[in-house]
Length: 346
Image (cartoon, rainbow, N blue to C red; front, side, top):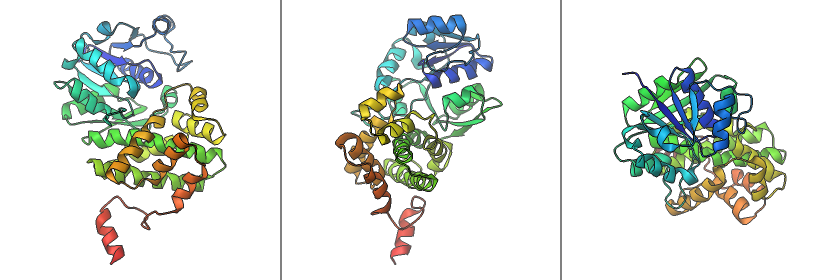
């Protein structure tokens, strides 16, 4: 049965491109944001000048600041708000009847105080809803320029995976599916930590060799941590893992990478956040991950090093030295890790 209406909740850069891709595929989209001024601008000039100036929005994208208008009758709802406000927004959605819709998170973050991913919040607050997540190497400014891009939709429900794929796929936006929702979402959250580290390394003069080592060791940390929490470590070899990690650790379009660049220039974390001007989830994520890794006794020297830089003011050289000290001697650890260690030690 054809869909009649889809909603995108959150007026940032990624919410904007998602709304437009869906509209260009022929669907009516209600695009919710808090700012009445931004709503008026988008509906009049079909452009989100605050986040993506110069990017024309299809007329099927109708902005609104009225949550009821956005949610009522929407069969799929994409939630693209920062992790800090995610739970409250979902509560609002549910109070307006959104629990009957498919709910898809695009937020790459972890909730402070609970260590829950956004899909877990959706399942808590909307237990009757069918839930999915969207994650991958998806820089909004490149999507806006129609650069060929791949993303991953993950869900425990095959129907959710297939219907979300059908509304998003286009000639330049390729959608892949995965049933490891937790692993896909965790990869998108963890990579923000390592993007900050890569930005610091670039800012203090480290080159491509260092970046490639950082990316490789970061992937190992991600998979090690994810496996401990129940994710399939092989998920981290896909677009939502290494794909997202590579682009976030090498592009100034990544807000977390730009935070790292600013830190490397000697700016405080507060000044770096102001300079970037948008939410960079990695700043909060590294604190949560460091605490959880300590609790679970998971070895994560890079995340630990970044935590000490941001929250304890330690030298940035600590991150680079952590690459060299105390690592396992294996190049690739996370596939059949225990067996390889046993063979090496025998």
